[in-house]
Length: 556
Image (cartoon, rainbow, N blue to C red):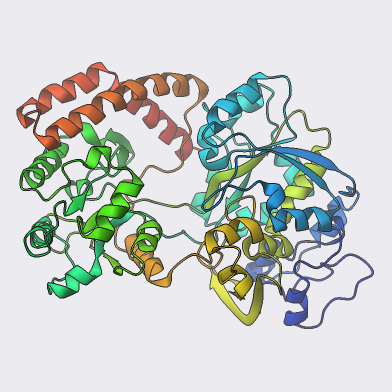
């Protein structure tokens, strides 16, 4: 039985219940005001899993709150991948307002000034009704959202969500796996934001990428061990004339997945072993990583100027044959290499054949980027909560993910299942995929939304996702474990202020020293001295803050 088939009365009173699954799905994106439609969303998953009928929550509890004529101001950094567009240019945001009868006024800070403008806004006497974090996610609220509740900036939402956002609450309880549900709560046990929710772990988007044409031409197998990687890079240099076979990240460390570095069982930054937090770049094993990178650098296998390369330079190097391997996003590099060569990924580097690394970039089911909190200035928080609940209803998440049915997508009649819950499967129209006026990256910004307060299907909902590159991302997800990763912890206000001061000086010193070690201008005989300097710069205090945050998280 499908996700939608049990729910009774999810249309407003006076409408007949659709008799077929197709007709029910066909109501997605159609007309009526949001306060007259109920969820048909994850609440039904609860019924599906439990096998029991529950009362209709949306119609019974919050129908007394009307959204007609409600006006809300939203401070929101602009999501961009192609052109920079305001949300007033986006058809979905306009459709939401039309269907709900609500008026949204967006305040967009200038690109690149989001953090500065956020701090100025918080310090002012003029708050919007709703704050969207943009890419900064929870990190924009330095010291944690509890601090901003206590400072009178945002409001706790628990009671309001129980009454006016039943679908959001149901999504947390049914779509999200049990061990990750605590990610939606602060250390003090509050819900303070509407987060995006993924029905699955979104695939890893960073790793080692290699020119596939060169691998095939040279008859090379997919590398796994350090020796195999060195052989591939050497052949790229000697047989393909690559002047800079491998492009390292600017800092000399891949900060996302720590590839190469993780072969020694350490993380690229803070990581944990059995509940004890450690910092990778001061561990003895880090010296072994630096020794290998220095050796490859001296052999000409690493780009001599990797520390100064921007994306434009890296693109030129990969497409013109200067380089053949890079640590980057498959989506980005795949787009670069169209018409030049397909790309592939190597295995996560290990010291010996058959080993498996225990750290990689991890996406959780909660998506803090572009999350929405309600401020103390909001005069109608009930309406704001009800508006934000829309993204967790069937109508809402179909609209946000895919655009308008019949215009940007059509239903296939098939479903896709995640964690025992079925969702409709769609196919995009030419308006989204082959629009002469809107390249696909611009179409994403115009005809759908990509990240925000809704159930987000990153795989199915991304029309720019090339399937070969998607397979790379899936491999990067499946082929490493995450036992060393620290979950989504939060530093408190006191820790956050000191942590920022400490890590600013740590990062400056570390970045310089790591480049010197790799490039050979600083001898690895000085590694112990480097570690002592890091301790003098209070790295151990920063570790203690991360340890305290992990313990609070575990006790949520």
